[in-house]
Picture (cartoon, rainbow, N blue to C red):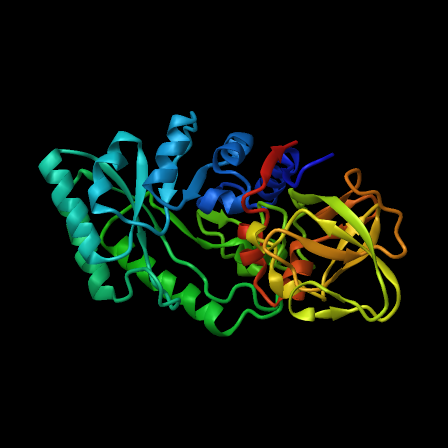
Length: 375
């Protein structure tokens, strides 16, 4: 009998990294975003698989950075969205670059580098309209630039921002996208005026990267792109020219097969009533494993290359599917909940649509707590 498992295809990840790199304009670097356990694909395993094609890795925090360094990863690591005063010593020790998103943080790092005589690599984050992290006012920027000028131990490596609406229609190059781009240029011009050179400018996420490849006349790549979800095989635009392959496959064994008579109900809250006599399979997976309960009575799985509709409310560790017209053996067959089964496929977007959730949410949580297998 097989067990519930999340398969990660490292060959697909390598293919995607190479495909993305080939698509970029000459000289543009790739920062592959592997934060949050590489979007549920495995931090160390993904980094090792694609390091040869990475110029930078984008990570969540110091902890992820230390894990990667201990695993032998040598490429530059940029902490994107975390800051810990208590772990400043680890930035130098493990050669980690820190994002600076406020004057206050830069002052703390400045004081530490002077006191400890430590060089620290930094990227300055600019808020161009997302209203999340980042320097928002030119006066704040100038204060930061003066601090950089006064302390040579602060290694000013790059400047970046983040688009808030790049995954809107491919044809839409107006509104917030253009405003953020123009504001970023304004900040860049100020930095140039202060005489800083050889900085890495980056603003494009996966969606903006796809836009830039599709429409070279409106190129958003600057010196580097930060690619996350595209690396894992999920394009933001169907019309994108970048070829990528999904890397995840989630399977669960059939624990039991049973007959249900017309009129009987299945699962919690009597949420599904059989209209006719039917046969169901009980699968060894539920919402505790990251499969969204809101897909109950909406989604389907694949068993022997056929669709088996989810019936009844999904339980914490079990779910029922309709196999009335499917040959299925308990303790022998397995269901595919994500990925390909012969000629059929279930995508992250399918599950997101069934459950009314964001595809990023599904990608980063599905298969939680199950065995991860690398193939």
